[in-house]
Image (cartoon, rainbow, N blue to C red):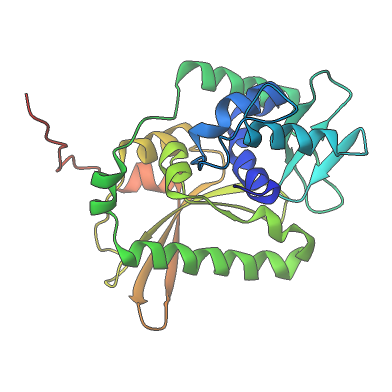
Length: 257
C-alpha cells in the first residue's frame, strides 16, 4: 500500500499540470500517474471507496490549518468544499498559489489535450536502458545538492517521477530554481559526448512544445560512467531544443493487422 508521503509526491505533478484541483478530481486522476497495488484497492470499512482514495481524503481531513503548504510543493485550501489543491511558486516560507491567470491557462491546456495515455510497459521497458535510469538518479541527486545550497527546506520539491508518471507528463524530474519556480527536467544520458543523438517520445516532444517558455529543460548527461554513476551535464532549454535540434522520425511501433 502506498504511504501518504508517496501519494503526495504523485499529487505534485498532477497539480502542476492542472494548476488547481478539487479533492474529488485528485481522487479521479491519481491512478493515471500511480500504479495501485492490491492493498490500495481494498474497500474501506468506513467509506464507500477504496483505501488509497480514502488516504487522499485523509491528507485533507488530518490537516489542522485551513490553508497548508505541503513540502512536496502544493497548497491545500480547506476554505473550499471540497478542499482545493493549488500549484505554488516561491521558496520555503514564502510559497503562494500561482496566479489565477496561470491556473486558467493550465486548465484550458488540459481541456485541449489529455496528456495521459495507455502504455505497453513490456514493450516500453525494452526501449529503456540501465544507463537511462542511472542518469536520472545522477541528475536527481545533483538537483538535491543544488537546492540544498539555496533552500534546504525545499528538498521535498525535488521529485523523481516514476516511469508511469514520466511518460504521462513528458519529463522525469521536477525541481525548483532560486526564484521558487518549478522546473521540469527530462534526462537523456549517454556514455558519449554531449552531441551524441538521443531519442524522445511523442509525449516528451509535445511537452517541450507546450512549455517552451515555462522552465522546461533537457539535462543532457554525457561522458557518463556506469561504475562511478557520474557524468557531465549540458542543460538545454525548451527554446534551444526546438530551435537548434532536428527531430527525425526513425522508429515505429509495429502491430499485426
